[in-house]
Length: 235
Image 1 (cartoon, rainbow, N blue to C red):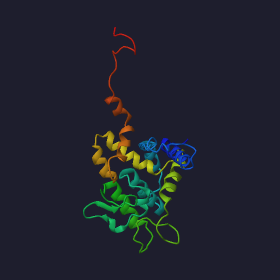
Image 2: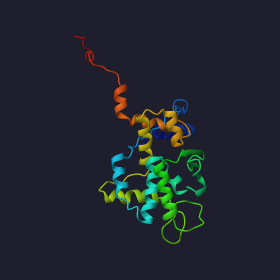
Image 3: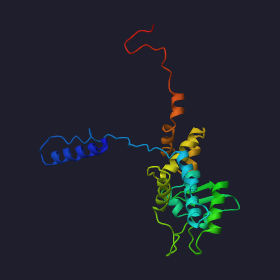
Image 4: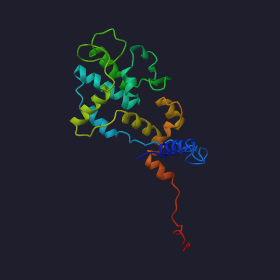
C-alpha cells in the first residue's frame, strides 16, 4: 500500500507533466503542495519475561556465554542500539565514575549512561575472563580467528539463537530498546528524561513509548459513562 505522501507526490508530478505538455491548463501545484505528517508504525517492545528466559539459559561459564550475556544485557538494561554495542570501545567505559560515554552511530551525538551493577559485572567478567587477547579497541570480539570486532548483525543473531532455544519466535534486537523506553514511561519517568536516556535528538521518537503504555492510556481516557447514545437523551 502506498502512503498518502507517495500518492501526493505522484499526482503532483503527473499534473505538472500534463501542464507542461499542454494536456491541461492547470498544474495544480498549489493544491498538491500540502504537507503530509510522517507516518510511524509503532513496533511492540520485547517482553521482560521473554528476555529473562533468554538470559537464564545462557551458559556464563563459557567465553561465548559471557560475551553473549553482556551483549544482551546492554540492550535490555541500558537500551543501547545494536550498532553502538558493536562499536563500543574499551576507552568508552569509565570504571572510576561508573559511566559509559559514547558517540552514537545513528545520531553522532554523545551519550552518557550509568554503568549499572549488573551490566558492569557482566562486562568485567567478559573482559577479564573471556575476551580474546587482542589490541583491538573494541570490547566485543569474535571468538574465532580472525580476532576482530563482531559483525553488525551479531547482536541480533546472538539474541535469536537463545530465543529459539526457549521456544520464542524471532525478535528484533531493537525490541530491547523499546522495552527499556516503555518501562521508563510506565514508571512515570518524564518523556524528556526518557529521551535523554535513549539518546534521542528530540522527544518526538520518544512519544511512541507513551502509546505503548496501554494501562496508563486507559487511566487518562475520558469517562463517558452516564452519557446518552448519539442522538439520544439522558435518562
